Amino acid sequence: MLNEVKYPFVPKSNRFLIPGQFWAIPLYNGKFACGRVIEVHPFETKMFLAGLMNWIGEVVPKENDLAGKQTIKQGQVHIKTIYETALNKEILGSRNLYLDNIQSYFFKSQDGYQLGSSKLMKGYEEIRSLTKDESDLYLTFSTWGYDVIRVLAEELSVSKKI
Image 1 (spheres, helix red, strand yellow):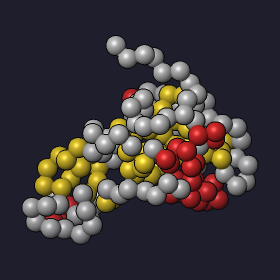
Image 2: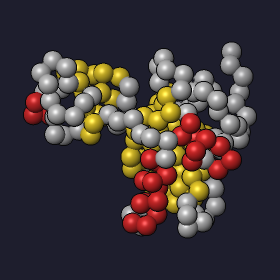
Image 3: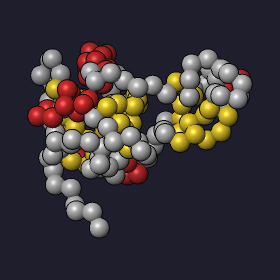
């Protein structure tokens, strides 16, 4: 049986990451955005699928602040993303993704379309081959650089689309 996770904590790998965990992303305007663990990579120890929440706040997010909020972007990130973007490099807490109907996005496995090698994915899971007609319907599964989620959060804060 796994030990219960105590918050906050600084993750060193994805071993203790659980879908639903979240971290505060300090913004240049003094506000905070929120990153979220969506899915943990099935075998890579440093990678996970992260989501940027449609939430901006004056103080760090708490579990209840995320109620009813959705992800506005999802991408694969390295654990170092938390070190680079999280307040004190910490995971602050967790809220079950199911409560807000948050799921991994559907993605296409690559840009463009190649018969036989283009796949439809849900998070890390390959669902089936992608049809040519579907190739323009889905975002490409991408790996973000360490600071991409903060850049997206800054854009969200400025656009006020929440």
